[in-house]
Length: 446
Image (cartoon, helix red, strand yellow):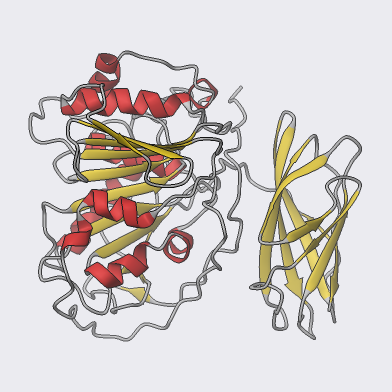
């Protein structure tokens, strides 16, 4: 029986942005607007592509592939991590892809994804890179990939499968290339997530090299981030990634330099002492799957902070509409692997609001995503009440404020999602211990 997909955690369960701008393969994206691109090339897993081109791009712009966490989306990463704001400053271009399969997780497990030309998500992602390179004067020596949780895993996969494309990668709360490999069709590998897969540097390096047999060219540098108390993707994976990429890049596992760039952070550099060392590893003492990721440090490592924007991008033939993006959370989102939700819904509201809950459960825990829909009068604010089963408690909440952690819990809107027009929808989420089965939400508008 196919094993149940375990959950990575869902700290950014805001609604996916409604993207009204669609560009055909013949039209570049509008400047300073997150724009959806269709027909970008071979795309075996039906990925979506959004593109951000700043108002002014560098004469030879760098290009960043930014990969979301499980349950996330490209537009959510655009609005959350500050990568586009830095693109405005330095003139680089950002691709924000989105997974469309039910889990919203990247395929980092299948044999197809883990070898060059094998198929699956990497092929579609490579098509996006090619699309942009065919339309903008991208600097081929400054193409980077960065990702978060599931996206961090895919960062390692893309760096392994396409070493001739990427010059550097940034992996935030991920696992080594090949660690999540399965042969039974499952997206989840609990041995890897639990830190029980430990290999020698040579073994890890061979997994990367075998993804593109015969390749002898330059390999991408790697920056690795992780929290020491991560229980979603064990901190063991931080050290295993360091072993893997120091071996791939042929540098010593003994740090060349150690410093402390942020509170609670220790940074080690391997194979060099400067800001673009072959491998850079940043760990956060006492942090779990959510860490204080600093986009500016990532952009510095990628080498994207050395160019100034000098030229406007090409004008498109049509002017796309502005998209709506989800609000910014206060923390870096952990990434879940989800199963298709089973919603429990209260009757639709005619005046106030209604709420429905979708559960993604595993043994001993769950994540609930709650959809709030405004009635015909709209809302100035809202409160959702829910009675938890006995023995169940809330351990974390996002996009809402929780009153209580067991029994009857009330979730109240935060400043950015309380005011809704008639029929408008927002989402919040929470993680809990125990079982969430049978919870029925009620919504009260103010």
